[in-house]
Amino acid sequence: MLRLLTLSCTAALAACAVPAPDADGRSGDERAEAAVISAIGTPAVAADPPPPMSDPLPPQVRPVEAAPFTTQALATFDEPWAMTFLPDGRALVTQKKGQLKLVTLSASGASSVDVAGVPAVAYGGQGGLGDVVLHPQFASNRWVYLSHAEAGANSTRGAVVVRYRIDFSGNGASLADRRVIWTQSPKVTGEGHYGHRMAFGPDGMLWITSGDRQKLDPAQDLSSHLGKVIRVRDDGGTPSDNPWAEAGGVRGQIWSWGHRNPLGIAFDASGQLWTHEMGPQGGDELNLIEKGSNYGWPIVSNGSHYGGADIPDHVTRLDLNPPETSWTPVIAPAGFVIYSGTRFPQWRGHGLIGGLASQALVRIEFHRNTGGEAARYPMGRRIREVEQGPGGEIYVLEDGSGGRLLRLVPKA
Figure 1 (tube, rainbow, N blue to C red):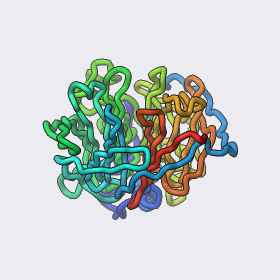
Figure 2 (figure 1 turned 45 degrees about the vertical axis):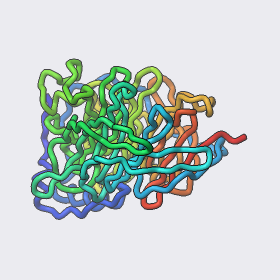
Figure 3 (figure 1 turned 30 degrees about the vertical axis):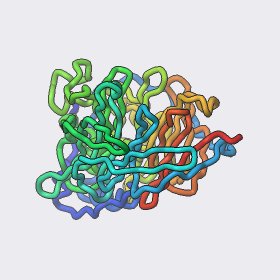
């Protein structure tokens, strides 16, 4: 059983004023995490028995490579966050303030309408309406899953995943039959590190990333959702083969722990699960997610705490699962797809990550259970989301007010 040897950040935060984080998860981290570290000192947590070791970290490679695509601007959105494609070729796009857009694409542009019935969200900092994914049997059940920040008691907030049936009428759509699938526990103060990215796996289960909410040590607490990768059934139930399924409750839903702020999740062709997460001051990570494994945050990181406090590197704790690659300086990763289309055949099986701070599209090459950066394509704006279209094109969403939807097509 995991033994916690550090003071609780929750108690420490009550004694220190933590300013609200900025939307990009960087300057806000600096203020919030510096306050936490000042209050409690550097966390020190004992670990479970060592898990199996991952392969060594591959070297980072950033070759100069001309982009093999041209970019078409299709539409503009207000703080877009995520998107997914419907079977008929239309798309759903979330806006952080709480709008879900039904987008019709054409060869030259796109038009959109608001979907009715979207829930109220707790907007602010990094919080608001988040991810959107379809159920694997969407064609028959029309189930759509949304994640968003939700207000709680005493100025607390947390992520929630809700399932709806989407009904189409003419050119519009509406949501019905609301069902709460998962609620991030506990709700805490602050507006950062919700995570709440989602993916359905080949096993039909729903996988959810849950950020540490800038509270640090709860990422090592198996009674808390914070800093975890979560696995539940499509109705929110706990799968019997989860690592701690017999424990039930929060612990029963956890698949891996020791994460900071995972903002990308994708399965490769062999069914392996990959996530990426923002590090603190340096140390963004790409991780291969293994059952019941501890990824070390905040005990180890290849970055440093904001405010100057050192964090031991991953190599100092071989019992904790290291990243397959890490970035310093950071790329501030957001959005993630593992490409399987035919329009870019040279990229089949490669990962594509949006870069916020790096303002780039970052391409990842995988080699069995390792992966690392192969190339970086400057985009000139912060990239929040990356998706593969039904025709094999690549779509990206720029971050912030006026964020454009861009279609990437191969150069002639």
